[in-house]
Length: 103
Image (cartoon, rainbow, N blue to C red; front, side):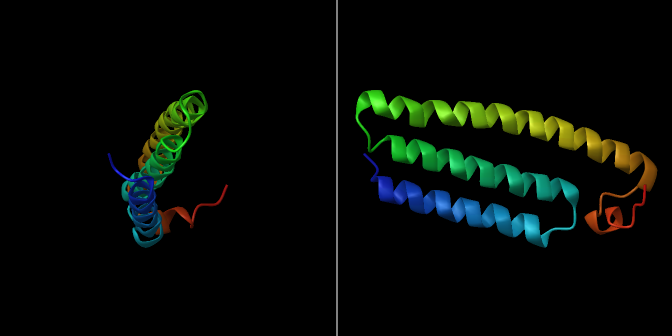
């Protein structure tokens, strides 16, 4: 069985990679990809911590990521719809161009 410390280290590395992608990439699709990677790293951390608890208490650590995944899926759908609408007007997926928008 894998030690919980190793799971937390993996979750921290994945989270840092996701945040680094969000900060460094101009392409909005890569930014969403990095955001999803960071959210999934948090889910992995929940699951890793739930392995250290007794059976009844570990259920909460395993159910919480299900709700987070559902919210992340809704966020991805709404974010993609917004990107498609902006792309129709701007004809670019460069996030620097979105800062020039005025409404």
